[in-house]
Amino acid sequence: MKDRLELIYRRLYSYFGAQDWWPASNSFEVIVGAILTQNTSWQNVEKAIDKIKANRPILPKRLYSLPEKKLAGLIKSAGYYNLKAKRLRNFLSFFLRSYNGSIKKMSLTSLGKLREELLSVNGIGPETADSILLYAFNRPIFVIDAYTKRILLRHKIIREDFNYCAIQNIFMKHLKRDAKLFNEYHALLVRLGKEFCLKKKPRCQICPLKCNDQLS
Image (cartoon, rainbow, N blue to C red):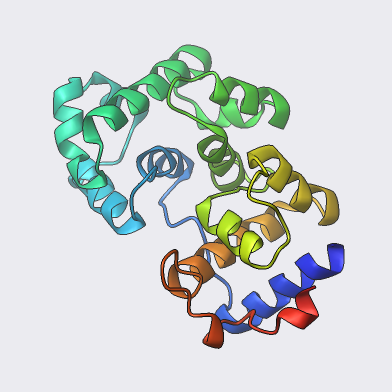
């Protein structure tokens, strides 16, 4: 398995190059983006973040002070905006209460404890929590999303019944626990999923991973 995972990474990196994720000005903006990107495209999230900024930095206390309806209006382009406004406020409440809105203070918390805390916030699931840990705090944890599951299924690395934890364990067990590697690998899988391993019409014949015999 280790060899298969490393081969996939080498092929994707050779084909796409470095992805330089996560596109954000700072760690707090990464967190906001991770919450807003649930069930929508990154382009829509960027529009929402730009609207929140409105030529001003995104600050925890400023965001939390906004009425929920106004916040929802600002993030409308991200879809499910009423629900996401609630989820964002849930996180902000936790962040301000537990860490006084300080990314530095939060960064001192251990990976396990911080993951547990994030998962306790209503509206933050494993994928969002791990995205925050990896991309905002540079913690070595592999993010699993729909693209990753689809790619692994099509290459018969997992079964349909594998849950988030089971899929994540494949990467955590067989790869060096390195945040930079996990960051790049996940970003490359997302790129592959968006451009080749499409849900309805996969472009298998021109896929960078088309040589299935070497991946098996």
